[in-house]
Amino acid sequence: MTARNFETTSKMTISGPRDRIMTLERLETHIFAAINSAGHAIQELSKDKPVSKQVEQHTTTFLKTLQEIDTGLTLQINYLTQVSTGQPHEGSCYAAQKDLQMAFHRLEHVKSRLGELEKLKTEHLRIRQAQGQPMIRSYSLPEQSHI
Image (cartoon, rainbow, N blue to C red; front, side, top):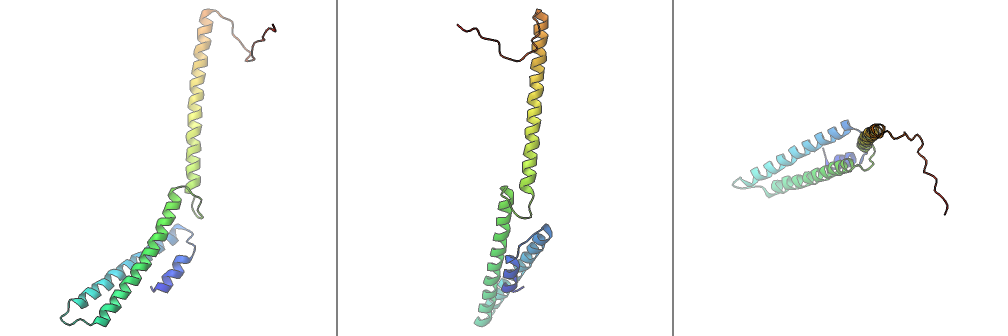
């Protein structure tokens, strides 16, 4: 894949997991090409009489491919950073899932606290009955005398 093709691909909006995987596979191909170019450059340099033009060509190809890899990995890392921090991102439902999970956690906490309050109320009523005090059915404030 040439630098131009990769730039076109990297500028497109990557919408789904399949597109992300395909992009990562292209990056893997670029990594292989970079290693291959570096190997050819080193192989040429190891010769008794290396051809400097070929060394330069392989080195230039290596550097261009390395830049493409850097750009592609940066895009992937930026995407993962957005998704993992819960920022809204097109094509990601991570933030919504996290909100739902937190809402369920809050719901369970409220249920737990209500259960504790119910136990306290039951215990309080049991104590009042044991002491023979009348049950208060109203939750209004007692009337205050005006002095």
